Image (cartoon, rainbow, N blue to C red; front, side, top):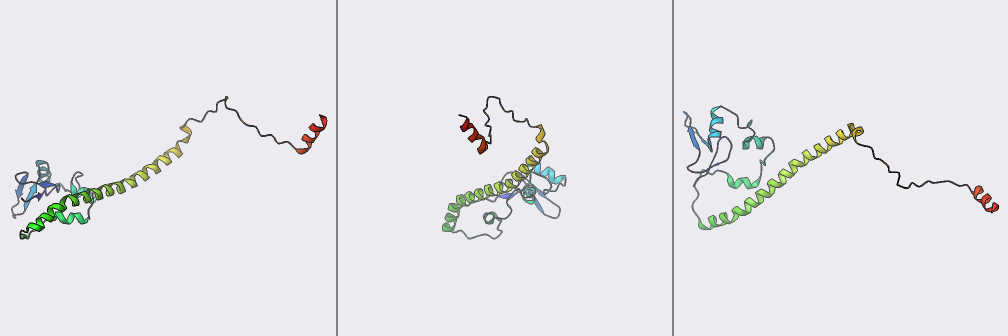
Length: 163
């Protein structure tokens, strides 16, 4: 079973699904759904349409280089069937997908750190500009305040002598 990639959005096109367009020069374009086909006919650039894989990779939203992508690469040479290799490959697939998901999570958190720091800077700047709008703290009269009185040595001696 051969899984193709959509020419426009790079999603997987399963057998029996999608649309296939053959140009006059015999170039084949496969599309996963009519949305991609219509955008292709309107001559839209996939790198400028925000929901496509090309846009996300170009603008740093998705991982572009990772060793796990090597397994998804299209190979045109037919491989001789070997039962052991097939078995090892099938056992490795869940591990590879787990590793890919962990790396994607790490990539997303690293990408969001920049936005969080920028947001904190904006918040600090806004707070600095509009500090006068915040209500001032009100001290209640029920709170006891300590008063520090400095008494010189001579005054204390005079008080002792009077007694």
